[in-house]
Length: 290
Image: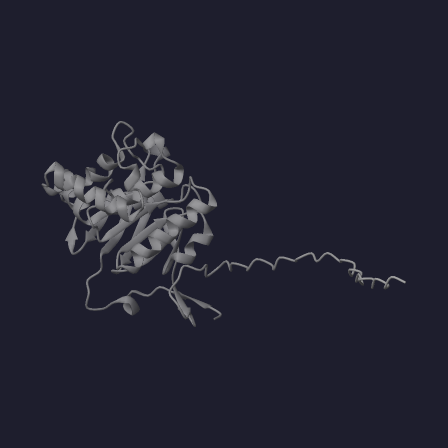
């Protein structure tokens, strides 16, 4: 069935419902540099994220995408404005309290994986659970369970440097999900992968989204926006456009590209060899002896 894609400008009133937003940013400003070299990496960002959205953030290098993601992940603080997550204003929270919120509510997939090379795969995945007060055995059991869901149970006691790029990224995703976060942040999740591994990773993120998780992904690849329900373009520290994507006439929920159609492979032409008809061999009758 043919898909029709509708791009509509995002409107907070249209998205509003009885469920409170996961994230609300109000006039967020982040400055870098001193004196004449000072500039706003984020310049008055207002953003509301509803539960279950899959948001792709795009824009040229230096536009503030990663800075915004770091603030959303509570890895950095804004210089001005309010960041509210699940109804809590994080502006005045201590670093320890912010770390606990991050450990319980947020899963982060870093572009460069950020696995610890001196720790095994299973120990890397179990790391976010240290803030949950679980015993080491319980942490390892939870890590082993999620690694199995990513078909990595045979790599549990490998070191990160013994894995392929695709396997390393899947471990990074497993680590981000082990604490069952409601919000997942992904910074160029396929930036260091080939096309085949990228497809596998995006399919896995799509499956995670279908289970109800909210995903915010920074990407340079416009083809990956096909997985998103909303696309934000940034420019010079501001949101230049904010659109949600509606899909009409889609018979099944899949991850087929909405903006770049996948063309079916052309049929393989079979070469038929012309063969000469076989000459029929008639048996000679033996003449009776005289």
